[in-house]
Image 1: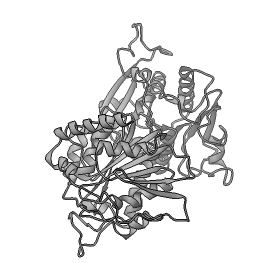
Image 2 (image 1 turned 135 degrees about the vertical axis):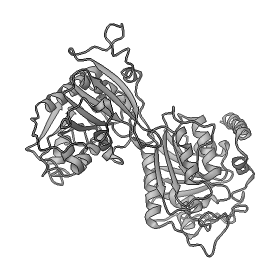
Image 3 (image 1 turned 90 degrees about the vertical axis):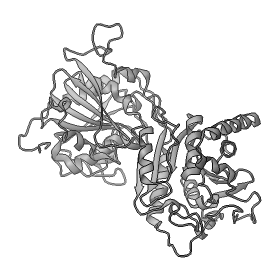
Image 4 (image 1 turned 90 degrees about the horizontal axis):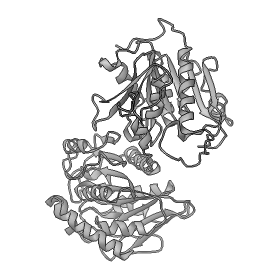
Length: 537
């Protein structure tokens, strides 16, 4: 293990040599005392020897061990702090890299909240590869690691580390930080969230926006309009001043702090992102969609399919539409992928649906979560692009898999008159549609065990009130529930095994064909109502 640290320390020197002067100064700043003034059994109250921003009372309180919970806080010299729930089955960890001049204790509030959610949280004393690796070595059996870097110091180092140590590092959180110019994360299957302040003059919103071009389209960005650079942490520095302030009141409200903690929690919880398989990606090759080649895709009939990738207007970082257009169009489907799943994993299913006459638009989602931007379908419906012109205005449906189904139901609840149906593929359900006349279908496998309750949970949860369900949420006069025998959850897409699910006893290809057939059969049986659907203008 020592040789690994030495190797990575050398790598750190190489990274430092290529970094800007502003970020390299981070390595010359001692952000904490090497010997804490006090380390008691219950609290480590450390005033950093060289840190200009020391922890406030709330942060110091978060370092104390509280009998009301099971959180243990430890301090290891030359590494930093560790927070863990000793009763939890911990599989994920988050390492905090402080900003230049900010004491590590100032991040303790967030670290403790992560531990309360069942994650391991570490705050390193210095933003070097060696310190981060040593912090990770304190919990060597964790499967999924995320990094959080604050500002020009911690952010730059965390970004370089995430790039170098991926896929061991599954997720990156940039807190008031940009990507270094040499770090391009667009091709990595890395969960990335950027949190920044509208009043930050140290790392301005304009600087943040400039680095969006180096980020993948599924990056999530969260702007806190009233926060300055040092308002994100619990220290005696406020606004954008790297020194204690007696006059300037911090603007970090408890709601802001909770929102930030929730963002961190989501990133760590979903830090295992699923990758579209090579088979799935092959459906984005129009040569393979053309009959006559040895590796051409088989078609169920005479309809042919063309694939198009287009940027979604007005999105930054730039998100994408993946469009499967049939040669004969009956209708259109706007499809939301499941949580944490590469949207391209649904290419085979989209092809099978398109080959049966329905244009499919797979929407790339920020943080791969359709709940955040469930209204995305409106951009498709409002578009004048020629690729959508073949779809009749009154024949657009909203659809989604798993948590993508939650986004689809939210859209159906808010904009139900803009679509003529909602299709859920083993979908979550997040809104009350009992009074809606919108036709809805829930298609799911009998071997879907992704969560407790048996496969009939896809019906029972949304039909019955508590304690059996969460409903009623479905209008039984307009909703159909269709189980697919021997199908499971993750074979709706093509992204590999998913924990807790059962192994399907039908093939991947068979399951996707069955889901496509049931989807198209349901949609084709819905009669037009003429005046029941709003136009897309």
